[in-house]
Image 1 (cartoon, one colour):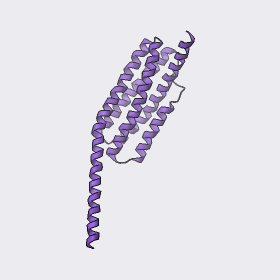
Image 2 (cartoon, one colour):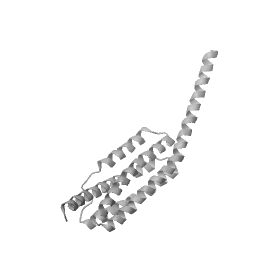
Image 3 (cartoon, rainbow, N blue to C red):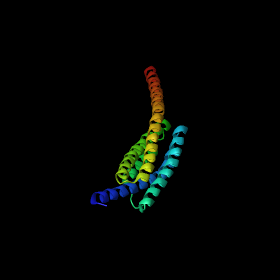
Image 4 (cartoon, rainbow, N blue to C red):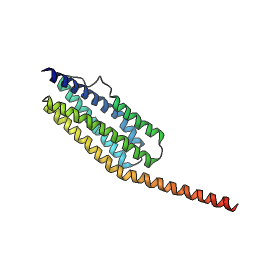
Length: 187
């Protein structure tokens, strides 16, 4: 193996470990997001993504085993930050439609991070002639993209609900203010 291939393989293995760390962190975070969701459809989407994430972990373990490498040993700080942002969102927001809209946004940040990561490692695998890994990584990449599309579709519905609720609450508060002004004027 020449120097360039050796460097690329080292980067490839490091990125696989990073993705493995990201996916294993998600195994703990997704159930919390599902529990926080008020929309049944969103909750089901999180539950489905949890099953996919379990499969993504298995695929990464398979690829690393075939390379003679352990997938462990690296902490994905990017995913750690994204998960922390989602956790803060849950702690700070108790309005169901607004929280669901925020959960979708947090989940899409995660998906875009994963799409970028899987796109890179798939390309590395292709350059290194790792055809089995390419197929597994491509499958995961497509699943991540499909999840992102589903989240966008859910967002269109849930964000509208959040906006309508905000309009209703604003209208109710405006009416209360008008009633108080009338009472003050007649007193």
